[in-house]
Image (cartoon, rainbow, N blue to C red; front, side):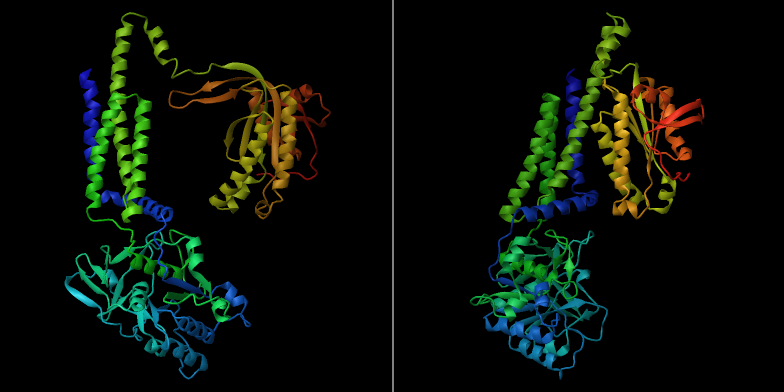
Length: 623
């Protein structure tokens, strides 16, 4: 017995060690999506510090509505830039590429060039295929050697603003955003290299211009960026993570361009501010998916990047984090293994859940205090694996003890009695119960044709709605859904519990289904696909109900000719042109006045007089 208790502990220790090692292996890459989603949630739960120096001016939809021509041209942009500069802004970062119609003699281009020249403007550029027009030479970036620059930071071409605008700008910076595998933008490339010229990110350069610091310095392996006294450690690909602002934070720092142009802003809100100028409209600004929202304007993302650099609150993972997490996994796994062998299963499960909840709680606290990202997903899954392994071993030990006890008991009692006492609670099969039931079968007219003309996704979408409402209706009339097969619903009334007046309940339910599905067919998504009528067959008779099947799978269902006849009656609607076809027993027991369909030949049952609650004028189209 002592050996039986020790084996689960040893298995728990071994699985803890394997789980800890797995966190240090490439296998964890399979959890990248879940891990990133958890980190996204953390960045949204815990709002990062907000730099009060950052403002955003948005050429939003209201700006276009209030413009006389519903078009903002470069004259309007020039006016906005001039107004921001006159308000005392330290830096203006423009997230709009003015790359076409570059004739400097044009009035609008001349006005914008003058506005840029009179303000501390940083213009952004995008990665592109063009190798003819290069961005203006950036302020020199210091390089501390040795330094390893990741290959992803080298680009071959760029999409830039007109040369005259870049010539007048204080500086230029890279403004493109690279999403992860799921297209979410979580990281910013700190700089790029083009023709041996280093260009910092728009947010970093705007902060540098605003605070008058010297150009950034890059160095190290892995590489880092230093801006004044602020040092930003970069990932292996040369990027760093930022926390996307919530919709509330974005609204608080954003001003509509039309309010700036029309002088609706009280005071001078841009004094000593870093102002990011861009648009939330797709045709002017890029909309990207972030942890905050599915479509966030790129100008707001650049503001978030600057916020991370200025506040120093940069979500990150230290190089030692995987090792620390592996050690914690091993220790926590050993603890769970010990608890699992000493405590009852329910207590072990509760303590295990509390331990996992504690891991998530610690991850939240660690992020809030130090911006460290703890892989609570990997830790939790590792502990779950340990718990599963330990539980499996414990279960195996219990089964061995049970077999030993069974063998001993069989020496004192007959084997059949022992089996009954041991298995009765876990394998209590419901014996067959003979009773009268009313069977209701449904079918969708022309479903085969519909399924050939629609995609599987569209079919499933329609059927999900159909079954949800039809099955709910059957349940409301006291029916039991036996099964759903293809486009058919099989239901019993007066099973498994007694249902008074079950025949008429089935009739009422059939009429309600008919009314519901007729209304459903008029809905736009059903009507456009010409969704067929619902045909129903109903009959009453005696059937045997109970569990059927082996130990692998049991099914509670009914067996008897009444079930088969109800299915045949549903099919008879096709030739009779009816929507509801009722068998003779159900008609006789209902006591209602029904419309006779005369005597009909039903395969397998001979000639029967059939009934319906209503006649359908048009005949159904056969499959």
